[in-house]
Length: 288
Image (cartoon, rainbow, N blue to C red):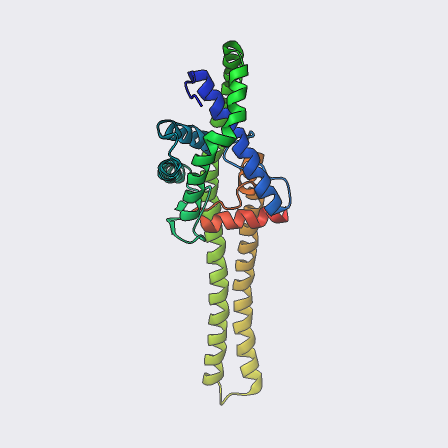
């Protein structure tokens, strides 16, 4: 098996595995979610991490042909390091984690886990000998000119998708900050409501202690004054809370379709600092 590919051929290999990876993950997640899901970071049918992973694994297999155990361990190490680095960079840039292994055994920071690493190693072994053979046949039958034309067309579409998706991801990071602030305001109002209820209970108890010797009418008058003052404060807080909730609902309603697709297409989406905002968005999008 030869891997003496030209640059256009390597790019075509990259794009093919981007699409195959997208087909695999979208199918799996769609079955799990029981509705069609466009999986991944990009809007189009591509998952670049699979494209990069396939190219790296093919390069690992080249000098180790005939040594499947060495291919397995080398592929596992290289792909795991790559997955970890990509995860760190994407979370630093976009404030969210597009995959999360926190619930898996033998995981590290939720970015990598033993199960995923073993899968990468197995893929490194079977990729050059089985999965890649149809792709290699395709490359052999395509003329150099046809390869260049296909790669140029796909590259333009891919670059445009990357630019648009990066903008969407950056906008989404800002949205998370905004939603987190609005959610914190609503939580503060709920805390004030709870504090007001406790204050009213305490005032009623104190008034009952102070007015033991007074008439029932006086006690009731004092009680009604306390309740009236409390009700006015509670009404203002309820109105403010309703307004805050309405603003939050309106902000979610005005979310751009790509941002909505980003949340719906990544059920394992996590944000260490803004997880409450992610959960809020996911909950409200399910209702819409």
